[in-house]
Image (cartoon, rainbow, N blue to C red; front, side, top):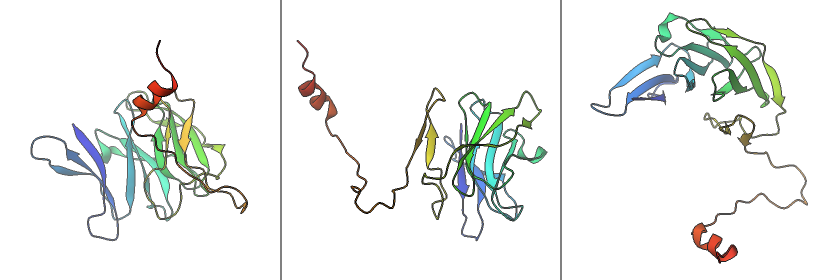
Length: 181
């Protein structure tokens, strides 16, 4: 089993590599060019690798065969994109547009053929996902019906500040709130 990682390698660019999770923990290049490649995401069926690259002069989303990344690449985004994410059935690819909008692309990836539809905007850019953080800041539910995203705080100065509630020992809290007869 191998893990897909970003490798910033001390240079001014990043590459996508794999690391063996057992044995000698060997690190192997997966996508390595003179450009920046990062945020590699393997499709749930294990056939495809989606990632972002600035090889065109701006960040775009590309796909390659995971088992043979040197066999070619296909551009998915049409107006820039970052942080790709696969639907659980491998039939859709999501990414953030450069304006922060959540984009959706239907894909047909049967066998060795790759076909992507036209990117469509799902959500406007009121969600955190751009800036200096290069990692993906959203996820999709297992049923593919909902997204978990960080909403950007509004500009209303009278609104309560955002907060997070952490519940420790929640089994004890549950027993207290819902006693079993």
